[in-house]
Length: 262
Ligand code: 5RP
Image (cartoon, rainbow, N blue to C red; front, side, top):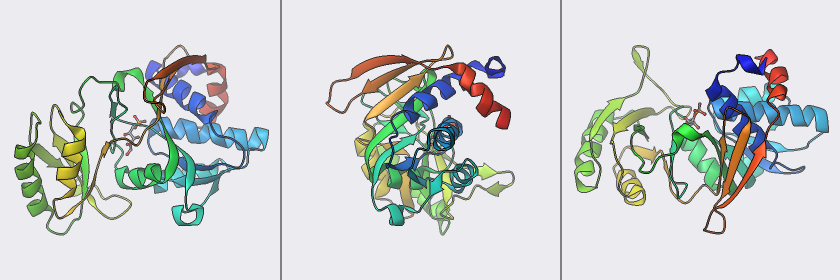
């Protein structure tokens, strides 16, 4: 049955499964959003059911909260948990320093708050998302609906002061209406092409009135788990500054049980 998964889904599953092994009994865990994170949530749910793993979890979106509850994970708010041991989440792009672009699923604000309120963040991904220079994936920024067109014009203006290739932005849509985030905001996707200095860009964007947060994660992620379609996953741990690399093999047969529930 796992053969029915596409190569990309097998890679995402392998990564999610590997990362879920980092979760230990008693931990407070942040749960990311997106298709890779959904595999991880299902795997954690299976561990709760099969091993009696006791965790409390803070989801980063209503979608993830719903899935986590469905698979039997104890969900609490970040205010109830106060601080987290670990957050596991996907990404849209990552570079060698583990700077990320996130927000493809529109949950960047809660994802950033939750990851920042965690001792450790593990990124789960497939190899195709690794880039030398960030920016091919459009950078999402969350903006307040009030005066969003003025905010957009200001964002495009300030982009002239930083080293990026493009400056065009587009309002994310959901059918013929603007996409609305869990926090009631809009998303602008910035077609930058190349981001020379993510730290600087992040600071500049967040100074524009109306911008709530941007999808650049700088100095937040510690470990990346890169899944491959053959079930191997490569772990790169940057906690000590220089990457420590290990490889593991995941049993893709287990995907069968999870997949049959979908
Ligand atoms: C959601 C995100 C996701 O983590 C990112 O879009 C990756 O998603 P997927 O695992 O489906 O490829 O940032 O806001």
